[in-house]
Length: 314
View 1 (cartoon, rainbow, N blue to C red):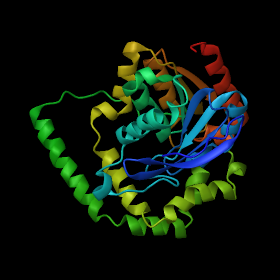
View 2 (tube, rainbow, N blue to C red):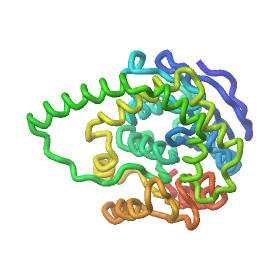
View 3 (cartoon, helix red, strand yellow):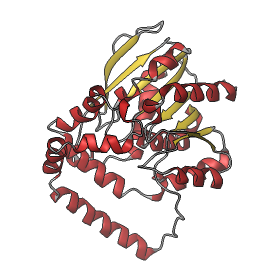
């Protein structure tokens, strides 16, 4: 299933077979250290943690980075192969990764650190894998808080009809052409300039991290599975429900790290979450955008490390 593990600060990259799909992952640090999983955002990969993983490894953690299915160097299945891709599927992937890759080495609870979509996956894991998770750092957390509606029979029928329509739409929508144009028209660079407040951090390495998966032949079918999955999720996979669920137990400490200049998910949403859920801690990073971990890694790493250290939950 997996190959060797380089300990004592070593770096091991590998592929893991998950339900017949190849999943790329890497690990840095000592084998028996406290485990940490870094979860990337939409359109990114485990390589987006380029300025963070070695820091945490040097601080004594066993740092795992994983390409969520559909992203990076992992398999890019479509609707025929996997039916859908959403944070429930990615949570299941993380769950099996913990069982099959991490648990043979240690029984210690897992620290999860996520960026954007990865934060939503981390929150999902904190709820549905509560006994496995030590703490969560979300930077930032997508999806605004919503008031959940009561489910009626009529609503249920409408939701089923809407799901069928969405599936038909994404099957017919020419995502192959969209991805081709995104690459040819420089839209990836435009998107990064919108996401990053500190433009000098947008280098060739970062552009390649985002662009290369888009160029794969299977990218469109996987994006189709994501669009369908994320747009048809039930309430139990949405941030508002998950935060509400987690608030009942408060077993998993939760830190929000938010860039003051985030254009994608504005800071007021982070403040709204922290005001509504008083047990959630919010720290604001000045002059930083959507990817604080890559824009201001020194501060991100320091705040994250000190917060985890001071929890004293080991």
